[in-house]
Length: 424
Ligand code: IMP
Image (cartoon, rainbow, N blue to C red; front, side, top):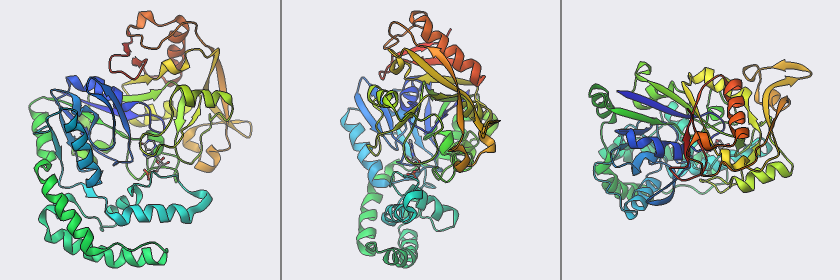
């Protein structure tokens, strides 16, 4: 039995989709357990290139069953659009994809409130994806949520929606937004109910049986540690728990089942949305990383902010989550850089400080301490064997490993599934 967990160790967009797609061939189950369609996981394989937001990236594996467990919040329209897209690519979805009845549903008012809160915050906005993620989680924890189970019941959905609209439409009206029409919403969701029903399963029992049968399970984390609601750069975070402990709340898998906690890190750092970013580059180097790295959000199409690798952050993420290994992605983007800088730590007003001592405000004022690492001649792009990597690239990886304090198991050298080297 193996339960591996993949976690983004920066601000999301580390290339987790490719890594899950690569590792999923060995898995019997690939499980999403938090977040929603704010995630954007790019997968390039024999079937084509896909931007997935909800359906686990392991859907393309011949063997794996893709599971959307209870901790995931679901926009049912997006779910069905993704089902149609994958079916069109020739994947038979029968028994390949299941979703928990405990998942909370994103309703039209969640998206409207997301936008309205952002506008109200003005300059201090979070820069959300606008998918209703914060408001649906707020409803969940304040006992105002509506689940897929409610929708299947039909009557529960109608009753709960009626109560919610009494409140939500008052708020929307006060904020000058359009109200949500009850009849139209009921009609739309009852139509969706028929289409999602075949996918709904008790995912807890499914995964418990899988554990008992010693099957291999891959937990597919979304976003990244520094967007975690508790440990990220609050309030510039997302609404869910991203850290390793989230698998119990989000999928019903007890922590001691975990055999591997894999942190995925980009060879540099990116962030989309607002909030502090100590190693951000505002010069032509940042622009070069953005262009060569195609750093544009899969979900929102926004340009990502780019900067050097920040070992202070990843070291913290490694301790917090108990990383047993890390996988470095997009090393090839640094091909052709004469010199590369790695942030080894921070100072604030001349004194060394650690991430955990800082608020979002003070993190925004730290000075990164940099170590210069020579670039390399030759290419890492598309290299499939560690031995074939240029010496300078190997040195860079060793530097990351030393600073983070966790072994690197693989390094990804391109977007295709096989553009990856096992570190020996
Ligand atoms: P929300 O999750 O849409 O509420 O957005 C909150 C913050 O998390 C914003 O800064 C988003 O840009 C960021 N965010 C949410 N999901 C992702 C992701 O999958 N990758 C990177 N950033 C994300």
